[in-house]
Image 1: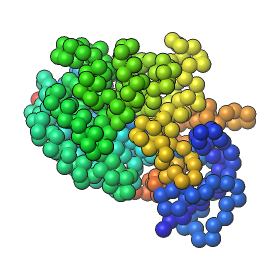
Image 2: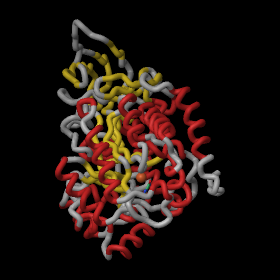
Image 3: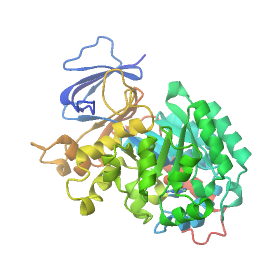
Image 4: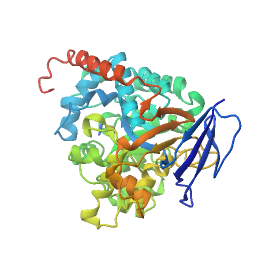
Length: 448
Ligand code: GUN
Ligand code: FE
């Protein structure tokens, strides 16, 4: 099958020695099979000349909602529970199969354009098959699952599900999509957050996750209002409650974790729970600033995610890296969250979070070929002389500097041209889909 040689690149490996050097990368099928200088291979399908280019491990975003991409601009300037009740839940309730499909493709196109090669995605209650189809055809690597929500106030009728129905639907999707395309796609059980889930559902998710060795992806301790609802209902803090139900382990990815107390931090550390830090979303929803330096001091695995388009409003890892670094500095000083720490979170940190540190997250022989090629030859990147390349990427680069994106050895974007997604069709269909979707919620006058 396909053999690709990337020539003359500056390679930021993110391997355990943090090596950076000029060289070539040889890809065969889905894997990197050689890294070195002047690599030669007689039967190549493609040569990419990466002279004056930087090759990095593709970004891994551990908290995304592809189903919400169509809602970009529809949830501005609200705080979490209002944002959910007044905007996001009614919008999700009005989705159809086609709108889910185009919402997912729109998001995936943006992610590939900005160098993201793996995502952890949370869908909505219905039509998740169509998101998986978009993921499958686009070539991106993903852990995804239908959201589970069998309880809650002011949840629109179409999003209300029974405990049994939610579990059956999740298991059916898992059986169909987990390990699809050789494991490029994996299933993740996705209870929305404690506020939306019964104890029975969460206990069942815990045992299914263990039985099938499948990840659990949920939101926790994002917002003070959310925490007080959980405390009123359970008498416990979020993470303590999740641990009480058997969910705190190395298969759990918790988005946000802005307001953890010491006991919650201890549980996360001891049980090796993964934290997905979403700085853009946390600022825009006025949730707060997560205490990431202290989590990192405790050796907790922290990775990054843009969250959904209506609470960011981008799916761009360059934004998240820059914010992750800058927001800590006023409180913790200028050396807190340096560029390298943040770049690690965006690459190998994400790989650890999804249990794939041996397969993705760094450029090493034997790993999957999930790469982004950056062209940093523009005014905003200069002077380059004697400037650390990771500093240039984290503090100065933008998504427009990503030239080529490769996932599983397949070129998904080359010279800024998307190969598996027709950009103009998606933009056209996205507008039609949201227009049709909005006609289903006429009572929502607050939706602009
Ligand atoms: N908490 C529960 N649901 C959501 C969601 O869709 N987005 C965010 N940011 N937080 C949530
Ligand atoms: Fe979210």
